[in-house]
Length: 319
Ligand SMILES: C[S@@+](CC[C@H](N)C(=O)[O-])C[C@H]1O[C@@H](n2cnc3c(N)ncnc32)[C@H](O)[C@@H]1O
Image 1 (cartoon, helix red, strand yellow):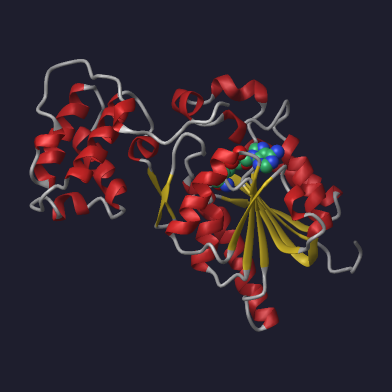
Image 2 (cartoon, rainbow, N blue to C red; image 1 turned 120 degrees about the vertical axis):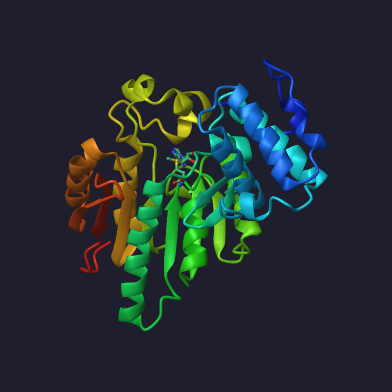
């Protein structure tokens, strides 16, 4: 997919429909949001008031209630320009996170644009699987500090940033083959002040790890089968990068490679944690067992669907 540069207000095509006072003339947050809601409603966006509040919350990086709590505050020009861009993009059908340029992941606000997948709530659960292992490893070793985690296909850097912020895991190596995705991840790593602990590497899956050893391999890889692409929601197909989602003819192309390569790079007792789609979870667990992993377990996500495969590299000392 062609790289998509960050948006500027001049990218916006004119809105059709009834004329509205521009957001740029609104002097308080409340009046800017009232006009934003009018624009969204005129464009047919359902629940327009809430949409406007959520766009505001994402732009300022706070809870949605900030829209009401800060309604009497003066609106700066910078805010009005960003809100205007967000509203116009949302009115044109962009997903909310791309329209605002921000997505919340485990309470952390991340910059996102069309070079990266919008981080999903299911992936928040994948981070939890890793944090549990790191806490247990801390108990075994007396400290979590020494663990090295590899986040394969980091996209926006969501998993890597969350792990760096929420665990004293020593180091995180985050890989992606997309230069655009790594640029977004770099911005998020810097914004959250974790650049000293997160190393971003461009390359194919685990290849950037070279001969290094890690304690955890975590990945939310592309896992949609090529033939399933047309059945995805139009918002996903139209806006999200295909290379982040397409896992080849059977959806298992990247997963097969990650499983086999992880067996080679993980330290004894190391964790492999994968996000997968529900219909293929059983097959992925089998692949892990066939590759020599122990305790291959399917775990469920917040919606009760079988979406994670967790496995341990045996502590047998073999390479
Ligand atoms: C499903 S997205 C996950 C992004 C992010 N980790 C998340 O959970 O939100 C998969 C990511 O893997 C990257 N990717 C796909 N194929 C790859 C490959 N062969 N090597 C490295 N990265 C790859 C894509 O660019 C994309 O950023």
